[in-house]
Image 1 (spheres, rainbow, N blue to C red):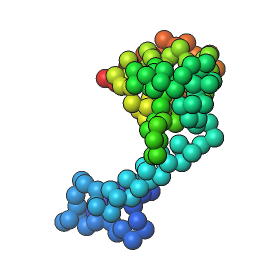
Image 2: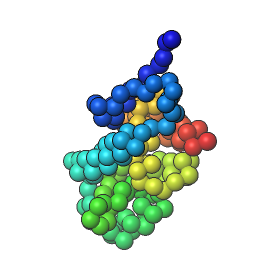
Image 3: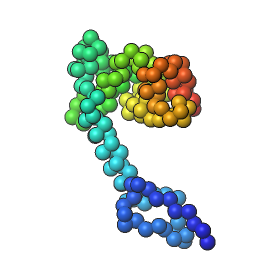
Image 4: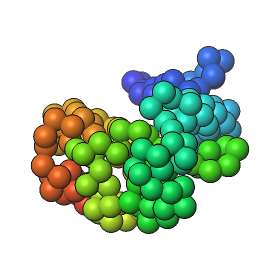
Length: 156
């Protein structure tokens, strides 16, 4: 009998394929733990990336105050991800003229002000953009309306 075996890059090497009798559509506890660890590692590495700045640095860059930056994060006007210690880290590139105008409409289209969700949308390759990320497409002149339409479609 032919069986299809799906392997996960997150599964431990010692995980053996299951026999048909104990086949389950669910991940094992070990696989789930591995996925959670990899997600935490990604978030930690992303927050430590060179393009991430503090709210104080963002305030200086935007010519405003840290309080205003925090209000913008809460409303989805700018992207901020919760820092492990306190406060937020923000991608510097969001303050570029090609990206800045789309952030609030994008948050509304996606129905969220969560920084991780906004960041994931902007940094994930999209088939509708020929494999480009929405951020790269914006930086290369793709109309804002097209990116917002893509976000609206993804949200539904």
